[in-house]
Image (tube, rainbow, N blue to C red; front, side, top):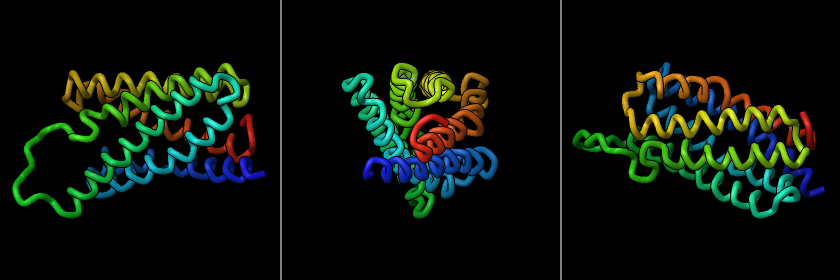
Length: 197
């Protein structure tokens, strides 16, 4: 009974994380609001930890150590995202007296945690979804796509740097406006219903 209650809570959190991911993209790309994008990134990262914990509870039967590894990497990525958002939010609310030097975020350089580690975690989770049969294989395939796009996005931000370069722009738009929100909302519905959706 307690697992079912947590699954519903985590499902709600996953849906909210998907919505916040979409709102983050709007705030970052369209509105160019550091305040809103930081807030949405912070909240989305925190909510994601509940969804990942519920996933671990469901997927650990298939491969316990891979499920634990996926959980640990996923939580590291989600907390890195939350910290990155918190840093951006703090700078937005109280900007430094002198303009900051354009350096990578010291906690999440070029999205190492937010994109790179989270992508690796999602690849493991997608593989576990495919192996376990607990969730729809479609969710697993979408998870693979999201994982690949996140890693490509991290590598693009690490190597290319220019946000308008198609190597960064195309994956960023796909992740932010479509694949990430779709995956988390689908996951949330599946968790809320207790299995396949």
